Length: 395
Image (cartoon, rainbow, N blue to C red):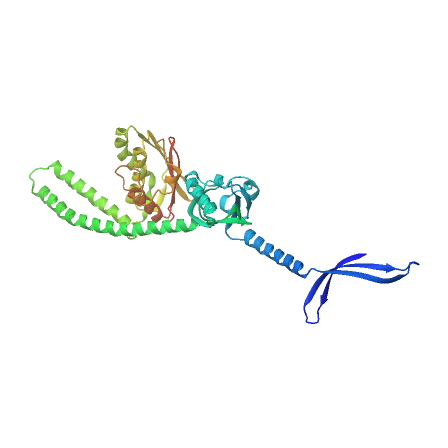
């Protein structure tokens, strides 16, 4: 007896598939006298199996090769399947996640929103969207996704949820940069107008004080003080222009050691009043191609931030590394949290009671104008390190 699947062509050209069993018939002397063939039409079953296999292949391709993160969870929120995009989004391997709860990979502040969305998917038996969900990445970096949840219904019962997560981190970062650029454009126009309006009356006041000084029969120290203060106001107005359109910088060979020495001498008295001391550790003259006044403003902003952060010791180090002047300002103040460090330099971002957030905005623009870099390292209640790198002067 033999069994096989055979294809028969009907007169109308249609193909039929039969499951056939062939059994030989023998005479009493053992001679074969015929063959019994039993056939069962399995065309519909074969076609259904073929469609099912094709459907499974399509589902597998949609699931495994989807450019978005696709996950499946049971009604308890336990992950039962994932595609390879999970590792790209979270930094964790697929094997590490299956069997764990999906919520364990989400930041705590977003847990209530996700619980509500999952409950609605199950109760309403329809899909729901949950936007800007923060993911716990393995490295600690910021990852934000938009999630869509769809119920898995088998024989009328919900057995789980399929989710799709779209990584929108880069898009949000781009939008934030655009908003910052727009802010700076508005601030620049405003700052330029203010500087212009301040300088007009300053010119008149400066001229009158010089006139009084000339007509005075004896030297009056008040005249000198007034002239110095008027010049200081003029310098402040000039600093506002840093926020406006790109300015022509008076590049020259600038001795940064001399600049830092002047600043430490200037700020030490104020620092002592706040219970702090500034230590300058620099042993050699290091030159950069830059503007001395702008560099002074940069270091004044950084050091004053350290004194206002409650630091008792502020150390300023400078050295050259691979053609760059590297300045480090260390303090033992209150420190800065990681989420705040990301926003440093943004206009109007400040935690000070009377702060505007423009000091570091100006500082960042000065560093950028000198083709340098600035970044921060900080720990709460331990202190902050500010690292500034500017190319050394070349003939």
